[in-house]
Length: 196
Image (cartoon, rainbow, N blue to C red):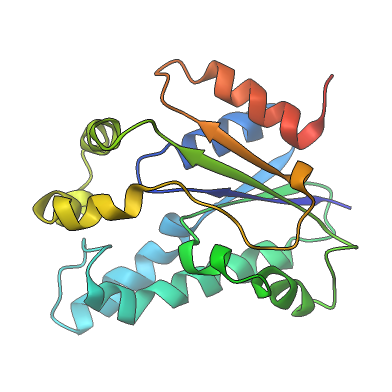
């Protein structure tokens, strides 16, 4: 059975970078919520006369947030049982706080936590300045709101936990502050697949 691995953390932590780096070494699909949602979010935001590059405001969250997670999880669940692992990337803030969320998701395909191995990589950086530098380095218009509302946005950069009923060994905290990500990639690969 393939593994379902979540890469969770704040914007700029390097979730996608780590997931793609490990997937390039192993047989794994990477499902990034931002990528999967973007075409729909652009249309929805435009239809409401809002900035299609906004990914952080209350209006965006009301109109698009839950849709993005539904699209991402539907794609992930549809790939359970195939011959590759599935890496899911996104903040999943509200979902990670709900102890019953992951079991409810797996039940949509008639599976349980006993039947599908779920692991979580919690990715973070050392401080808010490092997050800001990484986000600036992306040069993405999707980050404009973050900079215009930095003091409010930075409150979302704290450490994360997962309330899902997973064994402790299925959750790892990764500090991705080092610009040379090789050590973090190696640690994540070993966490997911074990030692060579």
